[in-house]
Length: 405
Image (cartoon, helix red, strand yellow):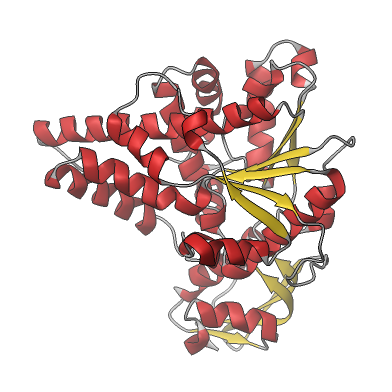
């Protein structure tokens, strides 16, 4: 994949950067599987924006901050794996798996299947990298890296073989979703668990609070400033990165009620039972003690939420009277959204236009990836959106894009 294409895919799916960073953190903390996988994937991982520090004291603070966050990431990864082992289940469905080494670790467990689900570029890179890291074919055969849309039940259901109960995990997936997408992901998970049995485990809801506790307790004012620079460099290098959906923002009883409205029984994992993970800084231990890991099982009731429909996808364009008209047909989800920008770039190289018009008459769904594609097109000096379905209008209204309609 060329650097230009790699950067484009990152802008549409910025979780690639955090997934790569998480893998590197686990490698730094001494996980040999993570280190091997990071070495095999290094050429595919976007570098992001570097923080410019030249003062030696700032460099030392940045090093200390990096190590601190690395320990927190390692705890999160190990905690999820320990819960899986404690439940003695045999099938993991890792939604939005990104670049992580869980599949390699799981391959060493007897009679365990691993399904890593993500977008095409990530899955292609993981399949190549894992094949070079694990040399024993019988272990490779236990790991399934599959392209699927996590908001589409039929797409995800087709990935799963066998009838074992499912251990579904989301590590930092939910924050990248719009409110509509978060609801659709929960609808899909509930349907899968109702059919197969099993649980959904995630620490996503309190992940931001967890980082805040760790950094506030351990860092001085200057170090928190460097952390702010790191965050800003990440947010500035993409558009529309994190969405404040209800799954991420609701707390306590309101969060429980919201999740249960999708057909789940919602509980909390007793993290202290699983947190004996070696020598940890007190603030890291405190963060995991004060925040919640959620544990969801299906009620078996009819779920609330929008119907999930599949559709074909296409992008067409014409240039006339100095206007580029881009027409989108189908689901503009994270897998398809890069095609919109590909079409724009193709036209940019073949003809002159002063205005960009995005026609969404036949666009039935706009995901967070689709939103990012729209935001990239919006940077054109003269931009307009036409012919919007109500369900797509609601998404654009939520992110403040109605001025361009």
